[in-house]
Amino acid sequence: MAQCSSGALSYVDEDGVRRVSLFLGQCLFCGRCEEICPEEAVKLTEEFELAYSQESEGAYVENEVELAQCRVCGTPFAPVKHLVRIRERVLENIDPSERESISKDMDIYLHACPNCRRLHSYEWNTHVRKRY
Amino acid sequence: MPKARVLSPWIFHLHAGGCNNCDIELLAALSPRFDVERFGIRLVGSPRHADIIVATGPVPKQIAPFVKRVYEQVPEPKVVVAVGSCAISGGVYNRSDGRPSYAVLGGVDKVIPVDVYVPGCPPKPEAIIHGIVEAIKILAEK
Image (cartoon, each protein chain N blue to C red):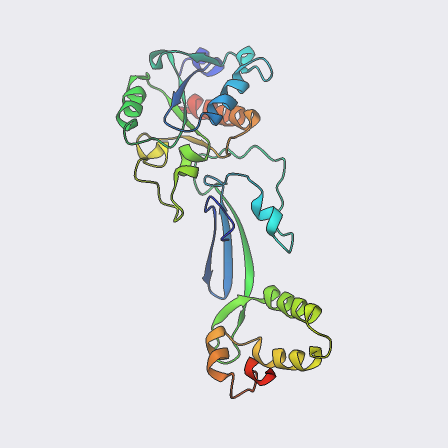
């Protein structure tokens, strides 16, 4: 989202769903989003018949992703896929000797929102300090 | 609506600020490679002869009154096509928070009513032709 130089990409979180939209009237078709997307979710096409006469018909390209709810306070905070991906990537890149204990910690804190994580980190014993 | 004006709409190219890229693409659409002139779509030098206004650029505040004057000079019925991201929302002339910069109004539709929007930076000549085709459809209904 921050990588979009023209500010055409935006999102809103509502009803437990993140709605991502791309306003074509602002887009530069630079392909930056396609280039940096780790999930390869964005793809530029050869489609050119984009002309529209009302904003409601074709001015926006939209997508929805489901948000995971915090297991403590219940507020939606991050896309479900994002959490799965974070877990995979952390376990992939971490030192193998730490892998098991980190994995256990992640079971506890990954499904809590950042605020609840901060409040409960000592209580759950998932604070990073315990490793030093 | 006289049939001749739908079958052979003349377009007036209104340059309102902008970086000239959309204008080059528009001229590419008119010149031999794509050649819309064979369908009777001609570029005219005076707004008084035109049926369709093709506007490009983010409309700087200095240009805004002239854009309005050109629009008023075109005889009814008329259709306005906004070509390029700048003509729709301000495009690259916007600040990082998405609002237009202090010098531009950010879009042709802030000054005159726009019927067809053609997104792209710049739009392909094919996209501009598609926009003009949509404009002709609207012109036929007017």
